[in-house]
Length: 355
Image (cartoon, rainbow, N blue to C red; front, side):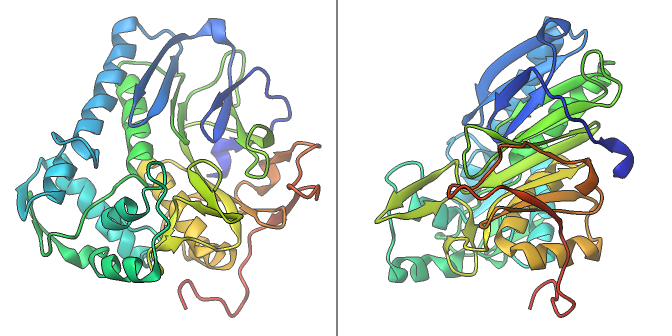
């Protein structure tokens, strides 16, 4: 991982994209922007034809039609509204990966929270459910509510519903990048929501792409930068989709053990990995774990990744493969004016991955 990550101080011009910003020189790239998966998607590639850029859009739209929770034509929607469903082989494979990841992360990543997502409706009705309402749906938010056999998915209770929103955008970003690479494109960037997939180098650079990370304390500003290539970067934070009531922020990253927004002491997480599914999935899982368990999970070596965690108090914790490559911007601070401070992500000797 260290070979693909390099420190870099300058990062202009910057393109704001969801939770990340990516530096590039506009006139060196063919570009294509479109809306899919409930977010704006930006494709930039060195020497790509219009046909190749449009093929990326077609791929992302196809993946949306497969994995959308709300599109009646999608395979996930059919699973959620049927007792037994036959799905495509790629869908079955991704579901198996998601269920395995849920087990490995002890449910801090959980692809079966559809009923809980609908109950809270963070971006719609913004419903603040009672404890009784949450307790009524929690039994139906675990993977054992589903059985996958080949390409057949059987649901054990009608109230159980899938939601792959915490992993599918990273997966799609990587798939889109691979499609360009198969066409011979060596320098490209895919920005899809809070996920960026990059390969090769930005214009006039030989150290990859400069990535700027938004501050979770002041999301309209940057907190830090680093450069990387041949990676997918994913961000999860409490500042993008949320509502407030009586001075309390209720965000969209749920703790499957409580049925409520995670309160782990973190404001946002950044994960860098070769695998887009892994980076997206872990950005949620680490957020729910909190710093100490995230450190223990990193040291376990189950997945190959690097991470940056923004804590409530303004401490920016980073894994050893990226720590020295990060550059905090001098004006980065918390809401109360505390300057951000870099520190290594280390676990307490008594901390186990999951106590």
